[in-house]
Length: 279
Length: 134
Length: 130
Image (tube, rainbow over all chains, first blue to last red):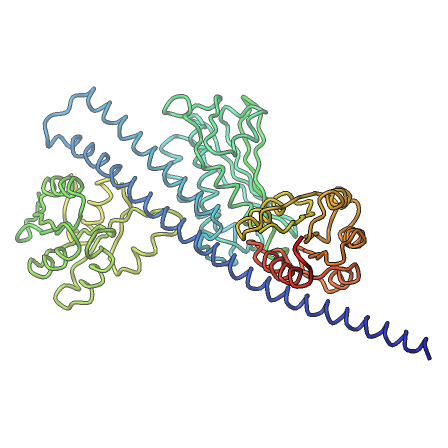
């Protein structure tokens, strides 16, 4: 009799413990839900602040830049007095640097939005081969201006990619643009792509001065100066953020980007992404 | 100056709150042979467009009082002014902020800072197809 | 308020933030330890009235720590088991180990503080202030 009572008491305690644990777990879940909601609101608020910041900075910096660019152009028309050759030269330098500032500003804002992670990307399934063709065609006039050959080596039909075509265009334009900056006249830039079932690989190769081994990784960091570089503006002021942005875009597409080069033997910039099927 | 002399000079309304940018535009456009009137904010811009009936409006998107986006919509919604082509100037050319410019109803947009050549090309396309660019 | 509280948690951020929140809530005497073993030492020495112990600890786990601290007594010692994630099995173990409550750690630790305040009231009702 005593044993039965003991057993009943034990089971009742067991039941009580389980009910307690169950109750506490339910309470905990409700709490976590509320906490998650709150964290979400925080993130949304931060994102709104970031968007506002980007818009404000953009406006505040671009207004004086506009005035500078406009003033120079107006001066150069001669409408405010004749312009001597050396004045023209220096005005040209101011203009170039205003352009440079504007480029940097665009890149900083782009990077800021990319890192914010809330960048509005129109995701779609597209043909990367066709996209590269179009981008290269658009850049031919620029290449011709610099007397550099822009060659596209196609292979079999490329599979589709799921992602942002606009961002991919930015990557290609950036890589080819960099190659154009560093390839001397009569040089060549070659874009090649290859793929297997699961990945697409695109390479942009130039016949420029190449990159030092220790810089190969660093060039993807923001605002790194490459001492080995030489553009028509003289020793490179630094590549800015272009490659950093390319890397961010590749990460977003679950791909990667890297550089291979030997000083004096040109450079190869390669990016690789999973295809639509693998994604 | 227009070789073919098709009637009077074309009139352009510049709606821009930054005085130096407005001045710069005025000077360059006059050099190209256009008549220029200016407005310092969206509200003034809309009323000038209604009373002066310019051949073209160049409008900054971000302005105090009534901003360019709303002013543009107002002009396009009004029978009296909806046929006037509008070029909007925007500071926001980054990955995809040109959307505002498109949805405003404008006929063309230009990102600041812009080259005057680009602006003149767009103006030419919209109102002066027979003009020879200097 | 002069209730003595001991926090046993190996996450230093959690430790620091919980201490701050408790101080804000008016508690003045707060001890901390970052492992079960160290926690026991502090408990023996300082005799807290409330112990907050995380169920996930390096070395001696949270539940064992709870059991041993309970043995130290006194009888009206209150123990609050905390966790970063809810788990019914974990809750059951905490109960069996003698915990008086099982609370999840949120970004502001509000629920931990609330649990402490609740057991403090029970503690005050059941014992005489020394």
